[in-house]
Length: 248
Ligand SMILES: [Fe+2]
Ligand SMILES: [Fe+2]
Image 1: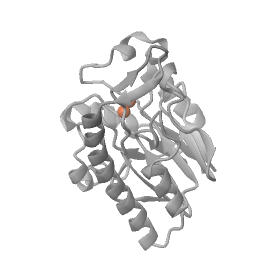
Image 2: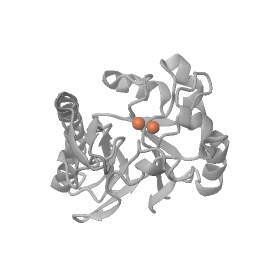
Image 3: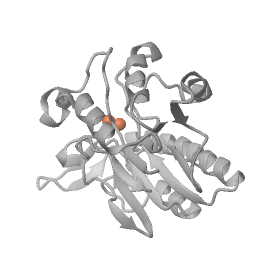
Image 4: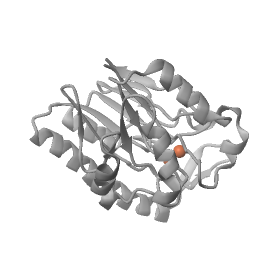
């Protein structure tokens, strides 16, 4: 029994592909097939696969059905987190998705799922991604304050959702946590954030996140140990479609 994680499958079996990089870069060529093969050789039915958001380009559940069917057919138990592109998933209707897709898929939002004596908790999260203003050497000298104020609101809502997830698990007696975020826990200017502080507050052992695509974005946030917590980026193109094993 092992726990694996990956994110950003960006499937588009029945919806239009919207990202230029996904059309051009080699890592994305037939990525569905590469990922399916890697899962078949790595995972068994007793394993659990965490999928950290941006599952589908579909704009509705109808357009994402085929993508969710592909995910359901992968080996093991699948726990899904919401990404910023997951239009098929209304956060307030997560219970409905859990009813529709049980027992193959579990949707994580304001709830938690057990893994041994651990609780898998999480939410989409948010990081302020600019616009940043640069000097002629490419150093950041300022940013759009209106955009930053808007980000602060989104961060506040996501923190409430994350606390709700932690508290549901604590109420049921869980004291060990794996925390999932779709967005990186910090932006390129930070070493700490309200999300890293909440991970520390509840004593999460690992924080797993995705969302960062392409070589230039892979090192935007924390990787490895920070204040006693292990951080992992698991976006699919970063992992080259090989799920990361988090624990046995
Ligand atoms: Fe993504
Ligand atoms: Fe994303």
